[in-house]
Image 1 (tube, rainbow, N blue to C red):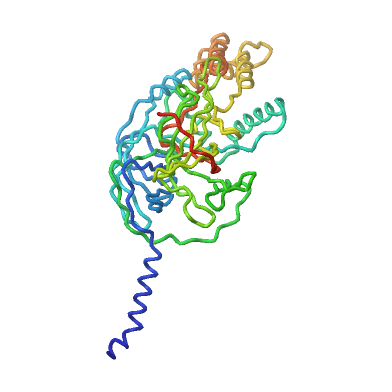
Image 2 (tube, rainbow, N blue to C red):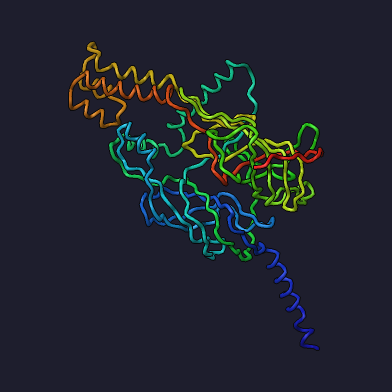
Length: 450
């Protein structure tokens, strides 16, 4: 008995240590098959088969309302093959770029946890990876038609100026020079993202909980964090809104979408009430309909797409009416989409005036006999077929030939900006969206069948 009394403090310390260790662990769990996992590379990679890929998870992954994989979890994979990018090849060759562009096919095989444990993951091949950006709904614009047109023009100006002012401009300018060449090396761009779907359940062991650090005050240039649960804003009547992070269940495109078509999304993260109880469980369904859809048309008229949500369906089958609108969505950077304050998405407006005028002015330079330096005028005026056109004009020495190359480039620019079919608005399946919803107490709405 005395031995037990002597060892009692040690036993108590061991029990306390065990309890503390258990409380400092995230629970084990299993991600079901078909879970979307968006990952993004943080460096440029060469465009060739066999290249190893190290990517970071863009958003945390939940199962049964438990966090299993935090954001920035490492995924390891490989470029398994290259597909021909026919559309990009055609557009590039019109501009004198004969690079055989490819689309990488990647497969991820491992997940590296925070403690260094590598877990095998079974997933299908991922293609169509692109750098993405988060569209956000801006505040409503004030003023009349002229004021709105002025704002649109300033947006175009800022986007063009950002080429010279945004970070990594040396690399951006170098890539611009490369794309003027008849042939240049390819690469997988930094920030390219793929959405990986698990083909089998993935068991995640318990992990040590991440240590928390005091938050730093935000700077004016930092993006505003997305509120959730108790931090969510309230509507005009004081009712708390739900900020719902979800994945689209189906792809949507303005080319085929119809007004009234059903839209569904799966809730990716649990939403909490002010008392920290779960208001919207992870795995719930958000259902609504398309409210506006216009396909792209000729004369550069872009497509438009708008949808909202009317209902939240819990995993138990219980439904809750909501008044909701799209406030954020991921989109491909090269799609050049924008969202207005009402959640309508359409391609950003192009500069239809300045660039064609500038090309027209340069095209006339070889024919201007009042200016000295015929060789320089030929080089400057032969735009529109990359640097190959400039050097061909320089070697030929003909003012008419140089002006002809410049006229070709001007015609292509005018056609793309004024005559060609506009761009469609497209969201792929598993696109991450943000929905701001206010619960309503009215009877459950009956949604149309799929």
